[in-house]
Image (cartoon, rainbow, N blue to C red; front, top):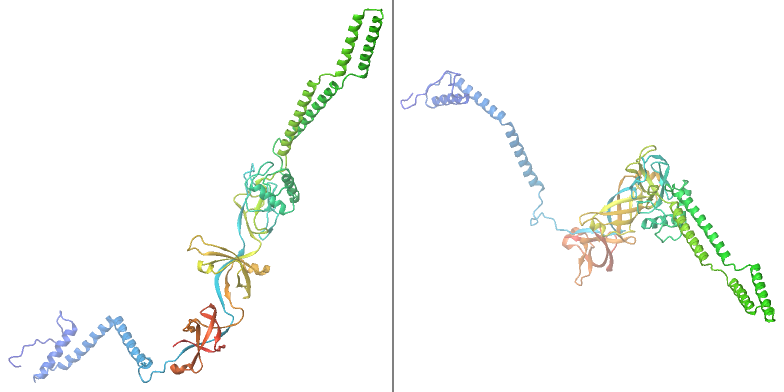
Length: 547
């Protein structure tokens, strides 16, 4: 070695300092061998072996790097592949620049003229079910004990009509009648109100006469009608209140006694006012005649004239008093009193009879709207105690109940026709019967539709299903020509026109076109009905919708 060389400490082959990694030892060995070769020094006999060991150590180090960062190398590889793929796509698929010589000539965007019916529809979802389902709750407050169901329990699917027996509770019927106002009190003679008016109207609707149907007073005619109601239902009228029958019998006895008193008073009056009998009149006349004879004799000198005159005057006064009649004022007063007693007794009898008239307990009538009704569910059975809902009933006809946004509902009206699909895919007609507004602006409207008659099998298949209903809010009268809305342009006078292509639209700006003035009609589904006014227009003509 030269004097200026830095001494190098050599380690035995295969040895490394304890504090240095293998890669550092390999590098040091390789550097030493290379330096010796450059300097012309005699190669170290172990140099080749040291270089081999250094290469092996380097490969081992890269392996550890690759294994420790495998995920990073995979991501890097994917990024490189994507970059190469992007460059290839850009090279072979990029559209040519419009300014380049390879760019195609711009063309016209066209659409054909259609010919057929055009309609504007509102589509909504609707549930299929029986109309107006309601829970039936019966008034049991009038029962002194438990309200036990004793019979007439309907089956699910049964139909309730006017005069049907909905249930039998404690041996008494619950009669179905048409009406909206629930039964809330017992109706008997003398009461009045809207519930009485409803009862009269309901009875009239089933053919039972009630007298004045417009009166809201429960009178005798109404009571008689209630008796007919129970007769048709096959049940006796409700028993009168306790003591009502005894009260009638007592009142009848009072009337008879009062009438007897009138008879006796009339007899006394007749006797008092009858006047003298024929014998009494005859005797009075004879007495006057005898007095006259006695006066004549006295005036002839045979007797006392003065005394004879007094006797004659007395006889005449007695006869006149007899003819004048007796004072019957007392008898008349007695007769008036007896007659008043008869009137009072008759009034008491009428009141007693009114209390015994047929009446309608609140628990024995069930008012339902839109009869007949279908029984959807029954919550009681024979022998159970009635509590809460007895059953659920609905209209006997099927109804579709849907919902629509306020904007769509504004386009609909009662009587509008629509269609929905039956289970076999056949379209079936339905008509809007009612629209019910939402509670606020955000709430959806309720749309009620009545379908055309359905078979029992169809009803069974549709019950509880949700169907799609299409409602036509505007339609053309048959087939018409129509074009996309984008095909319409405005002329100088504000008229509507379409541009019809007469040559190949791919010719671009050189394509031959003509303008046709049209009248527009119904617009629906992005198209508009058109009728040519100036120029010809036919089905499948191409109209310009863009350039």
